[in-house]
Image (cartoon, rainbow over all chains, first blue to last red; front, side, top):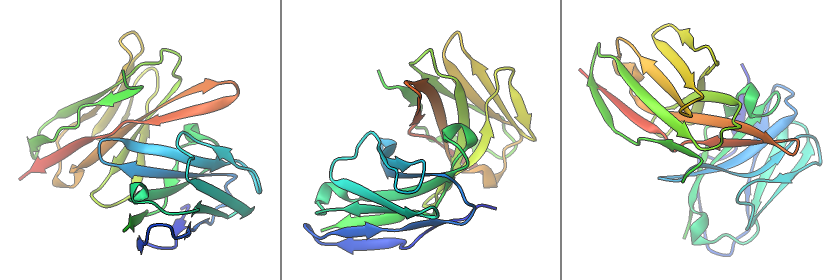
Length: 113
Length: 112
């Protein structure tokens, strides 16, 4: 089974801090994604990557950046955390695009105070 | 109108009941459809794809109605372990890219 591992389950950060969320997958998938999930809004795509060093903006990239230096690792960076970035962050991996189905990590619940 | 809409529920059903959820989508060019299951405080997990002709996996049946632009998930003989939130996913293709949209989910609570 594909395993997608997110480094932290819960994080509390202060406004203005730089925050790194790490995600590692172990099945050599080309495609990785970062979503945030908020009540009533569902999952929204922040960034995705189809290859090493390649990144594409999703629907809500503002305030975020990403890094993919190795195939198995996809990092989400909050340059200057704000309270409206308090959310559940989910990393996903896929053999192809969404039509291959996603495997999600267990999520990081980030609280910005 | 939202791209993908689901009744948030909750649907409270007794064990053994049959329950069905719908998910409507606005883009008639949508091509791929899925159902995911998300347990409380857990990540979504792929439940099943939805094929044009309808498909079944054990107690679960997924159907697509292109004319009315909705997909459905039917669960027969509900179990307590079916309690979860069910998310639909709709995909269309534009300019060489996929647009993947998740619904906000329908919560199911199966009651003893």
